Image (cartoon, rainbow, N blue to C red; front, side):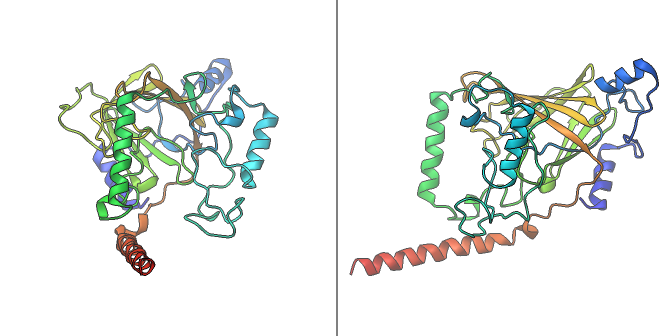
Length: 343
């Protein structure tokens, strides 16, 4: 992230500069206990301090994979073995993109991404859970409703009829550099898993490394905006419950939803500073028009000493010209082949 952008963000949310999170002096049993529970981390105005740069990267998948069915946690030995297998490309973490040069069956093809772009050294979450989903207990998203199935089928049919790139509107929001996969809840990917959190007494701002999205969350108790106004990141409102920041988000748009959810989704997130190096990030998805019950997940965010660099995202969408031109070329080649075959 550029210094100019950081300066603009700080001006927007009136961030008090110079707050240090590097270390907290502890002396005696009480202070040591406070540091372990996160109560020692406070801003100058007394609020829980979440500020800093955090990494939520992990190879633990959202849903529990078949090989770990019925197993909520791995042993230390199993976790080490799984990490080694993923590192060698022998196992693909569910939900992660793998187009590695050395992946089984890759045949030397570069594909979309190769190892240059992948985060190295990723591990399972510290709790050694086999899925990020903690409820339902089976580590799986609950079944979808008939309404959601109908909605999903209609979208798939519309995509099939239109083709992959009839126009720029068919290209994903990620490829158009507008927003990364709905942005929230904050889910790990195969790269660019950094988040920067800054605070004032009135706001919390969260900067995502991926496509440099920024969430500005008011803490002043204001109500949600009208349900007639739909936003790509929804409409977030935050409050403190003890040491936990609770963020309630509504007013989503159907353009940027995750998990097949609808614009009726209600998302509740919880950020808790548990020690010097960890924020426990939890979220609950409640969407009765999509899922037969609410479900929850937990993703640790680990403190880093580095910084977020600007994510340029194929330089202002210049790649769209090539994407659309390539689709037209494929269509022309297919039409010519069909014409030859009919002779």
